Structure formats: C-alpha cells, structure tokens
Length: 216
View 1 (cartoon, rainbow, N blue to C red):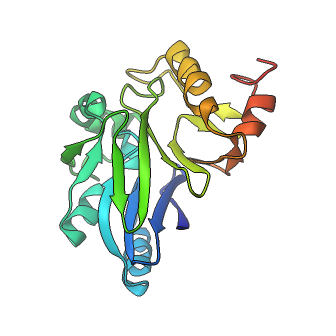
View 2 (cartoon, one colour):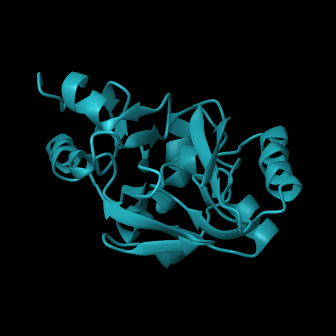
C-alpha cells in the first residue's frame, strides 16, 4: 500500500491518500483550504489515475474537514465519520471564528456514512480497521492497516504528545485511557501517522511520551 502525505492549511493538518496497485484509494482528512492546496490534492489523484472509494474523517474539527465538500463533489462520494462528532458541525462557524477564520470560508459538510468501532473499510486489496478512541473529540477514530503496520491516528496520539482535550467534548482521562488500552495494543513497531507533525511508533510513545508513556 502506498501512503501519500500532504500538509494543508494554516494549522498544518496532515492529509493522507492511501492507494494500492488496483488504483483504488481513500482520502483521510482532506484539510485543503486554499485553492492551490485543493488543486494539489486533486491533481495527485488524477495524475495517478486513482479512484476515490472513501472519504474518511478521523474527527470533525474544522481544520480537518476544510476539503470535505470539495472532494465529495469532485468524486461523487460522501464523507464517513463517527456520529458522536456531528455536534461539531453545528458549531462550525463558532470554531472558525475562535481560530481567526472567516466563518463563511467553509460550507458545513454532510456525513453520508457513520463509522463505528470494529468496522472495516475496504478499498482495492486493502482493509482498514476502525477503532474509536475518544477524548480529543467524542467521535475520534483511528484507522489501522495491519499488513503495513501503520495506523492513521488523527489527533489522538502525536510524536511526544497527545491531542488537546480543552475543546468542546474533550476529556483528558478518556483520551489517555484510549491510547493506553487501544493504541498501545498495536504491535510496538506500528508506525503512527498523526493529524499534525511527524510520524512516530507505538514503541517510541510507550517509552518516551510524557503523557502516556512509561515515565508519565
């Protein structure tokens, strides 16, 4: 499986396009905000003759969904997310204003399919397993690809840190428990591709993460 990383918008969100030899792909957290960012993502998909099968949201904070409507309209698909985050769409204008964005800069996207803990997402010859790890947001999801030993974790777990829990619906204890009980159940060599910043490994975070590691 091929994983392509893009870093989009002023909050430096990681967007991932996963594809395989069949040409089918999924887009995780289309965060493209500026026109040139949207063109970059679209051109990558078109230039590589990819067929978008799923548009996946790890969670529904505004910075991760800037490009939802764009990708959905370009490829005739609908976004997929956990229903516990739907309330965040209702407060989208307030979120934007709180971070200095024009509240008219994004149309509220729609979610076509709900994802739950234990679901499987199929594209090409690949399967992503869905895990619900709330705490950063009530509906935060991570997508685990066992054959490549990789997990796409949104804002749950970062290199040396964890997702913030001071936003609406966040809960520190819930997040820490979810990381330790779910994320840390993956093999130590599993690569964690987060929603912001560089990748890390489960082993590294178990050992060194000051919030959830052995010394925390």
